[in-house]
Length: 289
Image (cartoon, rainbow, N blue to C red; front, top):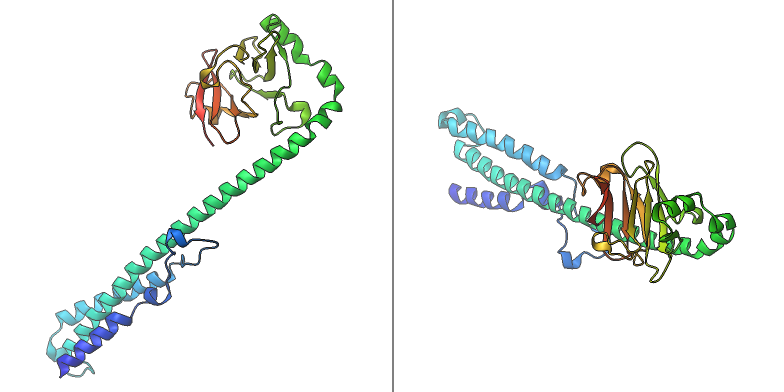
């Protein structure tokens, strides 16, 4: 009869004990994760289960090392004490394992959801920003007649390329810049510590291919596109709808020997390229954010 009672008690304890079993909820399957995730990421329950498991482990060890005579004055017999200890050790140990697994899965699912929401938000904001900038480009250019008529870089372009290319603000829609800077990017592209400039240009004669003139402070010149093929960008950069400067630390992650800053040339919703100067010559690397 005592054995039957012990067995019943063990079944009850193992089947119902454990904070994690009671309070921890794992994430729903990926196909059912619509909207805000409701699951348990806080680890207090498995931590409590672990503490109880440790205490029951000590209890079992003490009971196993004791004799029946040591329990003469105790409420429980040694066998009952040992049986209950093993049951609680098993129950809370399995509950702790369950809790750690489910809370870990919940945190991973929430991190994945946050990453996806951030990506969607970033893409939406970028699209809205470019639309807004494109809508005001014509107005800004109209307000800057001196820019349209003459730039300081015009003479440098003429000297460097002998009239083969001319400055042209052909980019449309405008990148992330005010109209007065839409056709120019500044950086230290050759790594000499002095400012350089990159200007949008077009061939003076047909087929009037588009590109970028890279004018460095030490009089070195690089023509990207506009009849001069550069990597996957080809000899005509008319496909490009945005461009920006990449700092040297970012550039050298893809172009290890780049001398300085680089240029990221982009096509919306398509592959982009990173161009850096290596040993005085432009080098192309595929770019993705």
